[in-house]
Image (cartoon, rainbow, N blue to C red; front, side):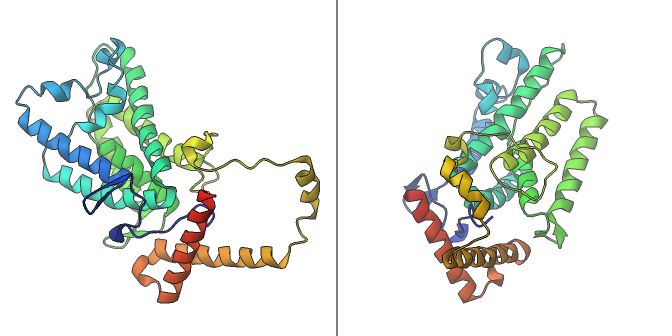
Length: 295
């Protein structure tokens, strides 16, 4: 876990931004939320026909006619409501956490998977049905992020002390029941596809390693951000002597175990539970990881 985790505090701008607008760091999460807020204003100002929004939401009939951009743009249609604002808030909090963990580029590709693959599943389902259902909104992307967060930090506490896996189980279960109650096939397919993409995709990026029952898919290193390790014949022969560790290797192994304990404490009790010494060690570890990536 410590090999991939680069800690930075989202409240202090620790995320590596794509660019800055004034003092605002535009990370992947901030960019997504900004597009969501813009979509709310567009929905409000475009009139009752919603001509622009109807051109980018998920519509199987239109996609089959060649409008394939809808497979990417459908989450960018959001109605103005208090629940939409709450959705953006939760997506910002959890998105920042996962982006800190994964990095801006892998997290961007993860969000694309949560958009394109479920959208494609609903499109294929719609091809075999006469009446297609329009799908839109960041609600499903947020659900995928929530599932991935719970997969990585299942015991992280939400208010009022409910673990992440419990929150996900209740929300996802209610969504499934709601789709069944209205006999909505597209909505049910969307929920199943979002959950499968979130779990398998997140595992394929190299996280949630405790969930061994979830399969992995080999992804290009340009997507995951992890450089594949290529072993020469000499390295393979020397693998038999791995038990003969040097003093340096032993120290590094001990340091990684210590970092893992600190990260587990952050997941369990939050960043404020760390002492000054633990924060310093975590920052030094994050700096080392960034230096390795730059080499």
